[in-house]
Amino acid sequence: MKKSLPSLDINDFDYPLPPGRIAKYPLPRGTSKLLVNQRGQLQSSSYKNIGEHLPANSHLVFNETKVVQARLLFPKNEHTLIEIFCLEPAEQLSVEEAMQETQTIAYKCLIGGAKKWKEKTLEIKTETFQISAEKLSRAEDHFVVRLQWSGAYTFGEILDLAGKTPLPPYLKRAAEERDKEQYQTVYASRPGSVAAPTAGLHFNDAIFADLAQRGIERSFLTLHVGAGTFKPVSAPDVSQHEMHAEEVQLEASFARALAKRLKSGEKIIPVGTTSLRALESMYWLACLLNAEKVQWEERVTIPQWIGFEGEVPALEAAEAFAYLHEQMTQNEKQHYTFYTQLIIAQGYPHKIISGLITNFHQPKSTLLLLIASLLGEEWRTMYNYALQEDFRFLSYGDGCLILPYDT
Image (cartoon, rainbow, N blue to C red; front, side, top):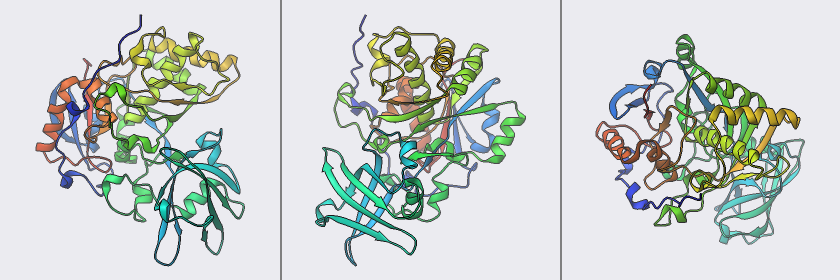
């Protein structure tokens, strides 16, 4: 039976965020404040002590995507720069495949100063390489740009050499050299994101050592974060919002291991909203495949309202991941790329997680909707507490550990 989509007024997810509460620079890893929300009981702690607050038998899931230096600044003349912000491949390539392309690629981009770009091509010239850019077409929310470069460099290497860190627009400052390291998790290994999975920025070797000593293990998945993560919900009703799509990388070994952990009763706690979104998207991929709604050979995109529509038979969490591993083995796939438009809001049926580690998010954002899916109206109590206790907000800010269930 088809369920109705949630009718949520986006204005109910607004709160006052003074500009001075937005952290423009990060604190040293592990020293940020941590708000612990244990079934509505709030307390202040520090990230370096996060292990003290995690339930026994916890298992943390991290997003190991790596931020690419996606902002290219092309000189138009001595006084004017045209910024090309590289979003995602325009061709049928995964982000990871795109990073390995050589010599040329067509890419979906945002262009700062597009009206000033009158020439056929723009160029960046250095002693070791040259990059040219040519506009191919324009869509409603992006341009398609042909990028070409000299030398035996991959596209990922060219971005790393010539690009700038894609800091969130709300920081309202230019990227600095230190952002290249600070706006990156210490475990980042798979290039492809244009925004960091910021909950992971707090973790360092000392915290990992403490967690290991407590018997808290961790695993890694990959969701490449797109610029849409900063897209505000402009529609008055959330049901009218079009969710952005992001690329997810599924490994057969991850599906097998997670199925065993779920079956044994381990408490799965994702680090960051992107890790949570990836886990839930993997779950729905299993449900779609099991119901024969999609095939492995397709370019699969998880629909944004699948968690609310009730049209796909649900599976138990452990069963879903075991099914993914079994099917990948039968289809001789150790690795599978798919896409997700999944939206998680109040009324969403969480099946996998026992908690969430995350930062504090923008008003009227889909990330705040996700927090409300775990806390209901109590999200406001937690955010008011954070404001009163001088927590720092957004990407470079402090964070919270949300434990909404009995542990």
